[in-house]
Length: 307
View (cartoon, rainbow, N blue to C red):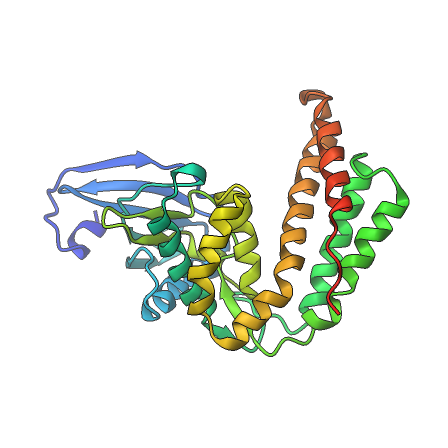
């Protein structure tokens, strides 16, 4: 009731509430008021900082010409509401991945990500919680845990294979610890976190996941989860994406592209093996050999380290 007049609508306007998929960090509902549709996000009081980060990140991206949903109102009075609310414009778009993507779609994604990755910070970490530690050391610690998970689940059987992977990733730590700057990245590029509007433009969703890091990480996830490892789409994307970067960002991308592509593969395989480990009674036993085969193929094609 308090929202309706703030949106300049008649208080007697009919209201229709719809459930929405997603919303892991916030409760999401769609509201249609007087034929206008909005997205309502309710954050528990314990996640107030995330709500503020979502609001501020959306404002920053809009200032840089990056297409994101407009936040129309921010309600921050937990005593009255029991939660923190964001009201966003509803994005009327469609999700595309794999074969559904056309050349113009890929160009639109490339344009938006190049703009995003051209926003810089002197520190790394979540958008609202910059870190002072070393990024390479932190990433390497996570990777070692993932490799341990692969061994624990039986997906990585030989100790020498684990050592080979660990040594390969450890080589990159010094360079990752001494970056000249960090780019703003989405953090969770996947189908559903971006929509194509009727006019063809690409709108990024879920700005609460923004992180300061290296753009190559977003691109590796894009290639895997949205392009579905289609090399032709990846090459077409790079032809549109790389010219939109500053020279320094282009250099960093070329240097770390291989690292983040392999990191994405190990992360995905570790998640699969963890599900097998936790829910083995619910999973077909033939799935473990599938993961083992993917690990074996990854080790066979392990890229040479840069000089």
